[in-house]
Amino acid sequence: MRIAVWNTAFLGDSVLTLPLIRVLKAAYPGAEIDFYVRGGLASLYEAQPEISRVFSCDKRGREKGLAAMFRQGREIRQRGYDVWVDAHLSLRSSYMAWASGAKVRVGYSEAALSALAFTRRTSRRFKELAEIERLLELAKALDIPQELLDDTSLCWPELRLPQSAHEDAAALLACLPEAPTIGLHPGSVWPTKRWTPEGFSFILRRALDSGVNVVLLAGPGEAETAAEVRRLAGLGCENGDCSEPDNFLDLSGRTSLVTLGAVLAKLDGYVTNDSGPMHMAWAQRTPVTAMFGPTVLSLGFAPRGESSTVMQVDEPCRPCGLHGHKVCPQGHFRCMKNIDPEDVWRDIERKLPGRKVSHV
Image: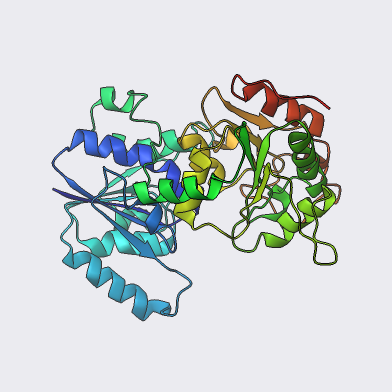
């Protein structure tokens, strides 16, 4: 049997698709499962044991338009899938499902042209379920045994990375002294999902002064935000002087996606906004302290596990959207500005491993 799973949404969405893939593999252990993801994400899943092949779909690449879409559809059809599982809702995704020619094609009834694209449909039940459970509704539509759907070990997004990535991460972190290590990631694709630079700089300074190692992280387009956090924490580069404390490491822009994932796995704590890397961290059971402003728990994308904490404040305007906005629609941004850095530090500190840290 050949199964395809299509989810070309953002990084976090693809991580949350792993429980669905793991359940499919448990139900059909002899099947080959291919995973179709957004451009640039394929390397993250190439060592995933349940996945046979990963295909990267660059919707913003050089080849665009209907001709490129039709060509991709023909290529997919030639791969001879028996089952196509569409976890996305777009017209393009529905077309690929139809073009696959798979005898069984499963998708959401809310998707574009779902009646034409799919042979089996199910509702996302957006207001009732969290995202992992919404994705597992697709497995239900395949009549997968309930005991597999209830298996909590299968329903965790167990992210597996190549050994080479873990070796690269260890080499990057080797310069830090022996001490608890936390990561700070102040960036996000969506501006209103970013906690304030002042908040992150407070945590950076407090951690360093407490004898905790700090790794500053930033992906593409996030370097300016990370630099502002450094500056506010008194670690800016002035007159060419970029001297740093021994327990500080700036990895902004220095990691690939897969190496970032391996760095996250080695941290004793990770302070982050509601973002894709947040899901990469808790999936590997790294303690997470996540800032939620425009988004809320009921949307279904919160980090899981006893060591995951969501920091948030009550505001009547929350949530203001599924992804947030470029600017606060109300003009006050209180959902992020009012998160108390002292509360955040207390949450981080209580999760650190047994070694006590000094207090300022």
